Image 1 (spheres, rainbow, N blue to C red):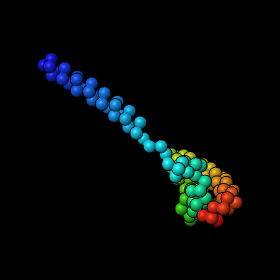
Image 2: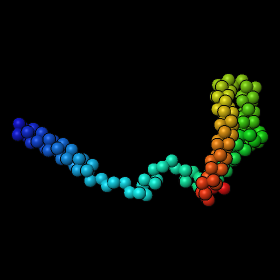
Image 3: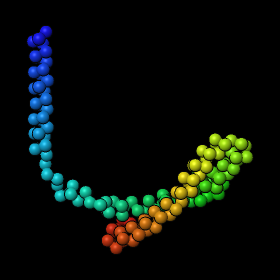
Image 4: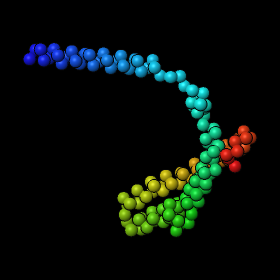
Length: 135
């Protein structure tokens, strides 16, 4: 019994030592980052300039949906109508839930409008930097 516990502890110590040595060897053998890797670690301006037109379309669609009429799924008007129906039916829990959802949805509109303005400035900057991907 004693020899088995000594053997197990020896194996555990050897494994721990090899694990540390293997980790140290792996750390020492990591190659230096290449020039292309350094170029990718910037602020992402080139990628953002490339994605700007698609982001603009997505923001426009989201704002159209939020500002749509009662018949548009996801619109503030449609959710307001649901809140009033829940209130008229006396479903206070449903009304509370929908009111919180409505508050959040209403807060999205100014945020998305600000993002549109910011994105327009980004697109202008991209054009001045000769990043032909944005337009």
